[in-house]
Structures are given as structure tokens and as C-alpha cells.
Length: 385
Ligand code: NDP
Image (cartoon, rainbow, N blue to C red; front, side, top):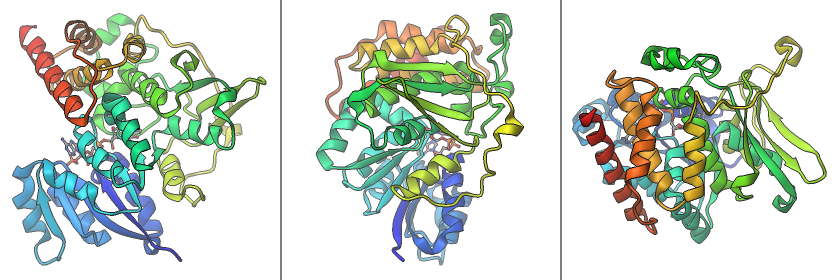
């Protein structure tokens, strides 16, 4: 049996937990190189001990003493800070699972890509912000990039064995989030607790809010644009409340291939862990007779302007997606902190996008600088309002 090595960036998060759950079930097939977190030192230390990781890293250096204390006597290297995160990501590993939330994951994800091995990408904000800079690095280093996001994983599977030249369209499905049937008045009064309660998926707070605003689907549109370059005009979105069909590819002969499965991220993660093979998951088999109905409808961009804004940013290209992503991250954090109304998130993103139009990034440093400046401007907007 071949033992493969793996690093999990964002090991303490929702995707990290699902990944480690699968690894735990096939423990003898994996050697864990590094696990990282932001500041959940106790949980990270517990996981590092359980999986016998070589290194554990907290991105926030203030949390290092707690990690060091928790790992004392284990022989596991404990490190802290942004550079240590990049160091961990650059350690040789057959597979790196990039599951940090937000653009904070960009530098370590790029470090993993530069190793030229296999990177399973959940951290969509990194690809949205770095776009061509990241895809150029993937090509330059001969890296295999596997999409973890359920929609992109579905598309990846539906494209397998087919020539992309024959693709007529790609359709991303969207659950529509917890507010899909709410009026504009109701949306204006939506609370953080309501927004993080997703009807179908169990996820981290940030992506749950993105799902409620539909920014998640917009970010995924930009992500798909980079992963599957068939042209933006061939990328569509359809609302599918049951989250059973995870996305579809339509070919020129009229055939549409779709990937279906339970709403459990362990399915697409397993597809990446085992790729190009398959592995077992503990997920219940899909029972279509019990589900009964699969429904679809067009997205409403009046109540949910996020997908329009994301499509525009993708069309504009250059720095626009990085600015959009940074503004959204700041706005989501402000909403979760009770500082702004739910409907203000998209308004803020549109305002920042209109006022800050930097030159297109050509390097990782450019992307990080644009992200940082867009955050500053977004915070300033928050103070003015
Ligand atoms: P969580 O919030 O659950 O977890 C985020 C992880 O990133 C945690 O390990 C956290 O550490 C770490 N982290 C947070 N901030 C920083 C930082 N500044 N520097 C370094 N590490 C940090 O997020 P999810 O697991 O839900 O999502 C992770 C990524 O995967 C996101 O990009 C999301 O869009 C994407 N994704 C998630 C899906 C899901 O079902 N959850 C589905 C598809 C994509 P700590 O615990 O210490 O805070």
C-alpha cells in the first residue's frame, strides 16, 4: 500500500474537519505533514497529536505560546505567524488541502502551488483575488489543481474525458441560501444568526453569509472562469434549492452531464483525496425517491445583486475581482459584528469597486497590495457610514 503525505491548511475549520474525518477513516494510507489554524491553538494541538503531524502552525503569532504549551513533549514543531504558514505550505507533501478562509490563504496556497505537486483548493477567495497570477503559477510549476468546492468538483467530474472545445455551457447550481424567498424588506432586517443558518450545508460563518447574499455563487462564477476557461458567456447560474445537482456541463450535441450527491462536503473532498481513484465515504447514499422533487429557477439579481457584481468584476478582469473580494470580506465581518445591515454588504462592495480601480496585478505581491488597499478603503467607508 502506498502511503501519501498531506498538509491541511485551515485544519480547524469546517473543510479541515471534513478532510481529517476522511483521513481518520483511512489512517494507514496517510502521513500528515503540517496542520494549520489561525488561533484555535488547543484544537490544532489536539489534531496534530492525533494525526502525528510533523508541524503545527498558528497564523496569529499571539497564539503561539498556547500552541507551544499544548504541544510540549510531543516532538511536533510548533510555529506561529504568516511566514511560518508559508513555510508549512512549502514543506513537501503529495497533496495540500488549501482550506483557509479568505484572502489570508493566498500566500500559503501559492507556496503550495510552487512545489509543483497536487493542491486541492477550497479557498476560493485566493483564486478569485489572484486569478491569472495563480493559474500562471499552476502552469509554470506543473501543479495539479483539484477543485474542492462542490460545484467545481462536479464540473471537473462532468468534464472528465471530454474535450472542453465541445462545451456549450456550464451551469453552477445555487441553493439560494437561507433567504432565497425573503422580500427586500425582510433582507434589510436579516440578522447574523439567521444568515449563518444554511438550510442544506454546514459551513464556516463567512461562506454561510456569502451563501445568503449569493456572493458565494458570484465568487464561484469567477472561480469557474479561471478553472474552466470556456468563456464567461458560457457560464450560467441556476437556483436549485435541494442542493442535489451540484453543477452541470452542456455539450454541443445537446447532452448535459450533471453530478449529483448528498449535501456533504466529504463527497467532493473524497473525490480530491482519492483522485484519480475513488474512495468510500460515510455519507448516506442518495435517495432520489425520498427527495421526490428537484426544482430549478433563475436567480433574482434585484434582491441578490452579488452575482451581477461578480460577473461584472470578472468581465472587467485585472484587479477588479481582488477588490471585490476584499470589500466583501470586510463587509461580511462588519455584518457579523452587527455593524451593518445585511443589504449593505452588496452596496458597500459596489461602492468600493467603483472608487478603487488599480492596475492589473502581475505578481503575488501586487495582489496582496491591492487586497490590503481595498480593505483599507472598505474600512474607511464603514467609518463614514
Ligand atoms: P472555517 O471558518 O470553518 O475555517 C477556516 C479555517 O481557516 C480555520 O482553520 C481557521 O483557523 C483558518 N483561518 C481563519 N483565518 C485565518 C487567517 N487569517 N490566517 C490563517 N488561517 C486562518 O471556514 P470553512 O472551512 O467553511 O471554509 C474554508 C474555505 O473553504 C473558504 O474559502 C470557503 O469559501 C471554502 N469552502 C467551504 C465550504 C464549506 O462547506 N465549509 C464549501 C466550499 C468551499 P481558526 O480555527 O484558528 O480560526
